[in-house]
Image 1 (cartoon, rainbow, N blue to C red):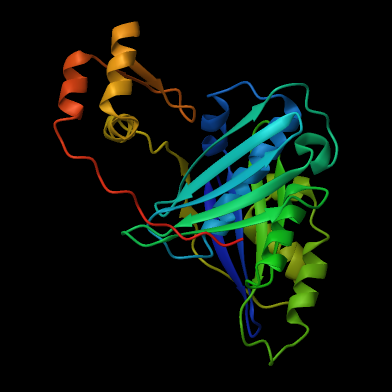
Image 2: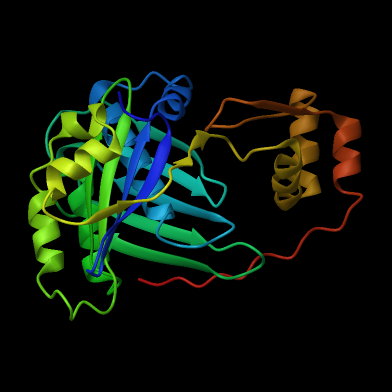
Length: 291
């Protein structure tokens, strides 16, 4: 049996290669409870959830990392978010039957956006690339190759019960073993989806790297958690402006907001609305975007 809802870091000793392994169970099931996704959408969403968990482990941040894929195909939006507290959430939107096949069959012409909000008032960074590759792992690999970041490769898998993934990354300074990165990738290319889904990290790594000296670090728990709250919804309503909120109150008698990620329902009546605009609005957060 594999470990549930766990993220592990591992190192190939005496090389510049590090990696991450993740297996999501209850986290993935909690997300699936929010919507009835058809199998092709479910698979892509599960792979994206595993990918974001892996990517979030490669950086230090207090805010969030968001993977967003948009296209003109039947699956037109996929969004997954990880936070610095190792929580995950996500959703997908489609408008007609989504076929099984390569990435373009689902998304059509699309783009992928990776956004890092480092938190604590620091700037947001975005990388935006054309959606290329046959699968989501290849698309993310392409993002890293285009954005001139550390060489990074992913292997992803998902079914109706679990989502899992493996990540390799080459750190600077590989002179001692210049072939280590290529060797690690070639071996990882032999991993099968059923191995990622069914086996614990130690077994997977032993099968791949039994001739290497692998150090597996202690696992960290992952969980589903939506970041919505009544306070955040109130802030969103303030940003709309008092006139628009009052117009909804006149027409509907109350303002009702549903969170797309977790289906939570927030209701504001006329008294609530009056209290909303008693406080001064917050200044917008600065951002920097990289294409």
